[in-house]
Amino acid sequence: IESVGGALLVWLLSGILSTIGAICYAELGTTITRPGGDYAYVYECFGELAAFVRLWIALLIIRPSLQAIMALTFARYVTWPFFQSIEDIPGYVIIIVATSCLCILSAINCYSVKLAMKIQTIFTIGKLSALVLIVLAGFSFMFSGHYENFQNSFDGKFSVASITEAFYLGLYSFGGWNYLNFVSDELKNPYKNLPRAIWIALPIVTLIYFLVNVSYLAVLNAAEMKGVPIALAFGNKLLPPMLSWIVPLAVALSTFGSVNGTLYTSSVLFSIGSQNGHLPKFMSFYHARRNTPIPAILFTCITSIFMLFKSDINDLITYVMQMFWFSIAASLLGLIWLRYKRPEINRPIKNNIILPILSLIFSVFLVLYPFYESYNNPGYRNNIIISSVIILIGVATYYLFVRNKAHPIWLERCNENLTMSLQQVFDLREVNNDSH
Image (cartoon, rainbow, N blue to C red):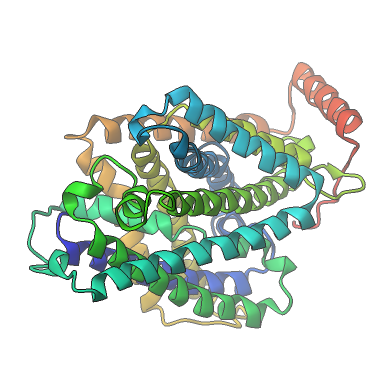
């Protein structure tokens, strides 16, 4: 979107839509209390096949892509001070640094959940501090008389394509609002604290992101934002050369923390899927003393590294957001279905039915739009083909290896040998299946 006003409106609406989605998930999370987030909700509402496809998409598309995006962003910002410009950074350097980020955080999560959570807290504080710094610097610049970028705020070209792509990017920035549901069983008094966390966190995040973008747009014009990361351009223009590295470093640290949080929830999801018989048995094993899901963490790390080679970040965001909102749409449809089919079920939180309906309509639009745009955009077309093939392979995998319990002898032996090897190398123990 080329207009300042349009860009800010998209950011504001992205926050509102994410908040509505999170409110709907609070109802689902307090109605269906078993862990696993939308994987558990789809299982409860639509059965095993739909749940397996949801897990399969998360396993091979959503989680690896999200982690790759954040690791690549970290790598770009952390390496920038060592080069003349962002364009001068060799691609292999970015991939090496991004891979190192994923491996270091995977090792930490394998070693100690408590240490990983402490790191998450530290980097969250660092991220908020960086955002506050950007807001203060931007508003100081604006209040010194620089309002020129806000004149004729809604002038500029826009189209359905540009608006939709802007929403993909805006909603990606608010991603993570559904992660709390994956670990809702670890919350104290989830009926009270889950909705409280949503109502407090998301409006604050929406306000902060909105103010950050006001700051960016006050300092930078359209030409200055093209071809370079915005935070980098912001720091270069507003801060003296000796301090211009502070903003990109702060962004790098915040993305480092985001990778850490996604790794943890991904490993929890895949471990639960394994306990339900939807993934190989070893994926549910935990370290005997440290109680960390090492196989699930390592698998998540490896698949994320593969995604690094699809290194166009915007292309990755579009790719993952379609599948992400496909999963959200399935959960919202399940919520509406439960209202109709099981009205008697206990619902500690019950929202107005308009909220999930509106959120579902918007989710379906975000899922279907790439099909329309694929006629003009080869990138969309390729992403749709890849995603469709992965889903079809997932359906075939379900019927061949999940529903059909009689596996070939060679496959059983491979699974047993791999499981035993992992147990010996990593000192793993089996976790009892208490989620189903």
